[in-house]
Image (cartoon, rainbow, N blue to C red; front, side, top):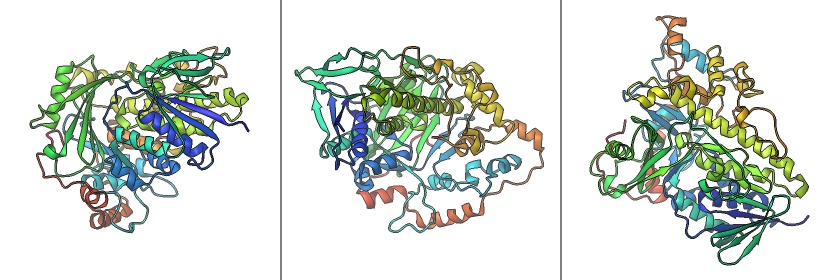
Length: 547
């Protein structure tokens, strides 16, 4: 079989994740060189250095590439993430709930959701079926010193320095055969059929390839500029379009612990992420420019940290939530921001780059004649996932009970809720979420919806079906977590079951594991210090916005 070549245009996390994964999957970690992989990176493109939180799929990426977890965490200032803690999303009263990565449900039939709804709900829902909310509140790591002795392992992801992650993947990949070219793309040449033939650099190099991967960020220099693929704006459902970010170093602002989770705290016109790494925290206020100006947003972010932060620089990052109509057009595939972006509330930024690389490896066209069919299936899968993420994040906003600002009143309006999500709400008012809800999902209110998601005429093979939520990223357990954390059906349950409801029951296995966790799981920062060499910083003030 003729050897194929991939040219990745653009570096950063997306580019180097694609290079590392494709080399790992297609070339068996560089041991069976079947595909030439080259990455063209501009030396003039500024790099956005922010802390990144991930989801557990990152562990598969590292394993497929062949990266040692401990080395990865040392190099990237990595910490463990076991949950996302949502503060002030339901009411502006310092209340919170967790969306953890591990749960323990009764078998063979899971009654956790229905039992909780019928109870007095005196214990938060996720604390009845997961130990991780309290493990997080105790500040414990999801691993032990030495051998694991607690039965089923806790699932986790990572929080890390994304720029150092990209640099690490660069060095790892080039040592295993990926060619790295530093130059600016100057010109694109195309075949008569519209496919890309080659890229010419400002140094006079002409680079040919069979597949071109666009990792040029929001500019989308290949998929949009050269292939003419349009963009669908999600701004109607996700109103936030800007973030102001700041790094808070531990040498002057160490809070005395490293939280083993990511915090998302709702503010007046959006929410602030709080991502702990080994040398600093990254915080960023995701907000809507239609409801708050830059000066007020920066002031609110600094007030969240509290203390003297005047010497800490910040930066504003505008963004537009949405997706390309196709992620793969002709022989060009967009991975990362060039293919779309959905705000970082559920830490899906790096995940979408990860998924794009995984699906490209699975659908790689070893024969040119298979390209169109494989691209059509790739586009269908990516479309489903973008809409799944859109619905899930939209749910956090529209279920709020907050009315203290115009922003929070607006996000609840029916016009800002996707039709698919509204159909799910209508369905789940009649029955609790269950595993089969994501098989052949076509609730009555979904019929005929989302025609805008279909590719335009003339784009090759098309799938005439509207996108569906396959539960591939979040199953019924995750939906229950957000729904019941956001008080979905609270008034209805009070009417249905009356005031004299039984006390909320916690799975006895949860209570047993919590007792073990207190004894066996070390404080997160202690594990980082002893296992990875994190510095023991002197304690400063606790951030004012911490709950």
